[in-house]
Length: 247
Ligand code: APR
Image (cartoon, rainbow, N blue to C red; front, side, top):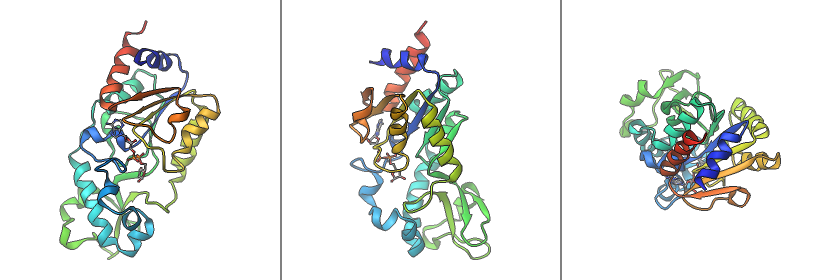
């Protein structure tokens, strides 16, 4: 199967990847819906929505701090590195990621679309002053959450909660790519959250082939042309090796 998948990547005119939290678990960042995922420790209804944050920013910032501490020390794993290599070789045109951990960019991918934002950028909800996580992380202590702006406003990470609109540019570019691609790698995502989960369906509908890499079945497994069950950090380097060996 690895060999066939490598041939599909080599043969494709426009291959893109859609990634989810599963690609970052081997970097030490828990995903959301696996056994020890984030939503097994924090109630999605109390922490996952924009109005959860607006209603009780101090409480939701406790979860955000838990996530940010994980992100801060995380490094790209072999799955991220393999995708960066595929882009460098010209086989991967873009990565659309649902992740906010910045690991695709850290791995070296240039064309990354962050569908749910990025934790490293924050802004004041009142005066809109922009902050970088490195500027404020030292000032964020458990006792004085939520972090406040100089103007007194509450600082929010530039990430998308449920009930929040996907960044317009990311939405338009992602749907355009899903319509244009002839091969989509769907890696480490349960595909339960829309509109991201629609992207493989659109691609399939336009005649693209779908290659799924996941530890288990997902909501789009039934439309996958190839299903590689296992760890992305083990499978993607093998695919990359095969692509390199093909004549
Ligand atoms: N290799 C491959 N697949 C993996 C690995 C791994 N090492 N680790 C976990 N997975 C799989 C899980 O089995 C699961 O199918 O990755 C998938 C992760 O699914 P979710 O936890 O639902 O994460 P994701 O699909 O990214 O969630 C989408 O939901 O809560 C929101 O905004 C959040 O962006 C997130 C969105």
